[in-house]
Image (cartoon, rainbow, N blue to C red; front, side):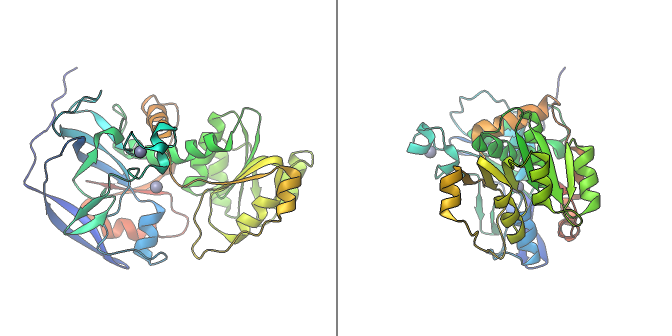
Length: 353
Ligand SMILES: [Zn+2]
Ligand SMILES: [Zn+2]
């Protein structure tokens, strides 16, 4: 099969900036040439995540103008000088985490903590940010992960899936574990997919009936309607009074954190997967942790091995992420895309460049 790659690059490209709460502006940015260790990527699709949503809705403070979009897929157009990696021009890739390769964290396999982890961020005169709401982007070549010929709107979901795989790995998930996921939004369902891949029995707790139905359709073993049932009592019941081996709070809410802490089994792990806005401290009795050898861990992003695996699962058709896509908009209509993305209950909105 021969594929022709459009490597011709215009002198400027279009990007969508969030210039204030509820405000979007389309700008033209001069195209730069990739430097050493970098690649130029023609963006095909970018999914809108919670950071962009909260910035646009004003729920979270951010610096404007902001060029959001960190769940991105596209095609490699060119490399900077001296590229020695496995990828080629024309390869379709998801844009992920980078790392310096030579710091303490990189050498000890914890590249999430490397100072270069977010090395793909852009800083143009027209705005800063992850830079995915655009036609082109320069990205560290070590942070590009092949997606083969899957649709870009699926390939760009490598990033959120990688975060869920990272959570599963850090939590030590094993076959046969009882895992509770609090919240069945996009990230709750990504965690559901990741935990099913690890062989867990997955229990999803959520107050919205439609979301529960989606969780069930996507493979949840048990669903708990937290608006009608007591989730803690139900989980205790389902686990013969032990509690869950792992609880993932996929919504950043005080009630979820309180419930989650009360439903973990001895030796169990509570995963703080979502940030909270506003932030309410989690109250924990040290003796309860001590006596029951419980763990609390945070998960914010992923490491290269998680991202590689996410892209590989997607590329090989090992996961079905299509139920997580709500709608698509062209980049020229970014404001409408963001307007829909911030409505409660939406799954991923895709912006197509
Ligand atoms: Zn994201
Ligand atoms: Zn490093």
